[in-house]
Image 1: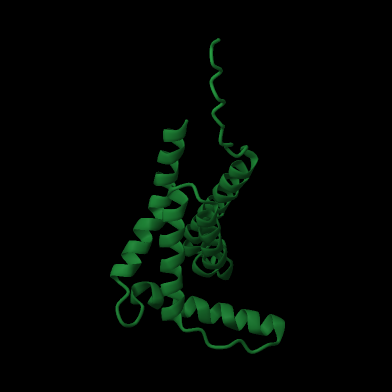
Image 2: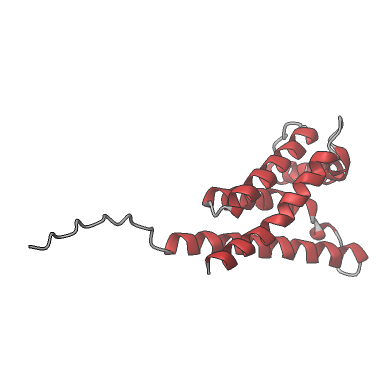
Length: 157
């Protein structure tokens, strides 16, 4: 069971590791293609939140947001591979923040072609959040290993 669990964590984390590696390689001076895709979506989200809360939100540097995403995905996935719960938490935070921004199906009507693609990707990220919650739940439900003390051998008399 130990190897199967490790292999499953490697396969799951490979999504995030490869994505973080690609974002890192394309980062450049301006944040790369990820920043260019995120700018209009972030502006739309800021306008929506500002109008609902009647508060002016500060400007967010998209380049720093992309760098944070790289760190969360990369570090979280590596820790997750080794079975650390903090890695699952980092990946969960990344998914919780990025999913509604990147996969904004709610800005489209159901008959538009982007709607079904974005909804599918959104639901896939929700499923990944569920898998991370399941991992943390299983990790917390398993009893911790206790070190066994060697009992001294009795001398034969």
